Length: 407
Image (cartoon, rainbow, N blue to C red; front, top):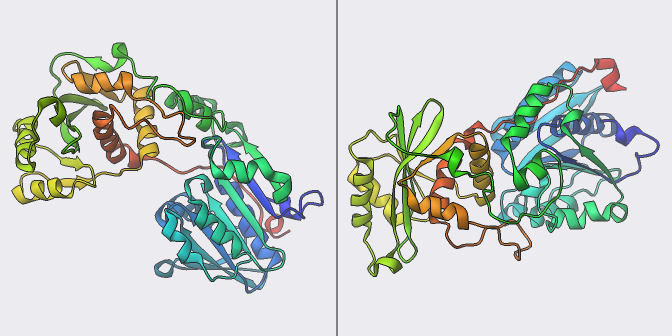
């Protein structure tokens, strides 16, 4: 929090904090950013950036603002305009909030003059957005603040910033879960049980490691496959729709905290020698539902005609799936590790794809090979919808007196 006011580090232009999840880097860094801005500047503009403004508010701003007020700041937030003003010891500065979700986001921050910029989960943002924001930091004494969980070692941020710390005049701090005093040993072990393979290396060990081998090495027929009938309290269907490529639908039922893939529909037009229409796929969807009360049908967002077909029939509520591939794979991996997903032995196509679905080691970035992935995709859509809302933000317990905060 105080690196900018230390003799050995104060002349650095940037700070980079990476490492494990739940290690406290986000909250401790955001507090440091506010203390620095409040003490060193007056009448200046700053930017805080997340993948989206919604995630930035949830993960950073919501826990941050009450702590600022308890440490002597006066905060005036304009939610509709995505900024807030902070006043400390008579100095007032403005902090703008930005989402950097894709290449077009760079235009949002273009033309501003900033005294500093903070990036939450910078590895999830496009390079064009980050570099445009950095170019806005033209005020004397401006600094750049980055935090992230590790990604592929070919990622542009790793190669251009972490590997070039001296050239960038940046301070690098690596966090582990042990750096978060609010985590008990039992909670830390629970997080360790959530991940395996590439995601364990990155989120628990904090390593920038390449993805390789099968995507779901934690999958086991002994642990994840069942036979017989299950009585469930909720039902959901997930759909990966294809015309030339296969279509894969899965019927999921919730029982005692576990989601079971009870049945599936998998139609490969190449294998069968004839394509099916939207109406024929819809008939298969109704047959898959089998008279059950379906909470929702989660569909590949690119399948516009099939989504419209489902809506036109008026029987099922349809939801467009989140198609963030890596986030979805992470959620599936975590659910498999915790045995929150199980599969009927009758679902032969998804069981076949588990053994074949692999990382593309030649891609240089995290990407699965686009083969044997249709049941994998419908499962990923399901996991993103059901488990995606359960993701929480980093948390660190902290107590700082007002006097010390100002100093």
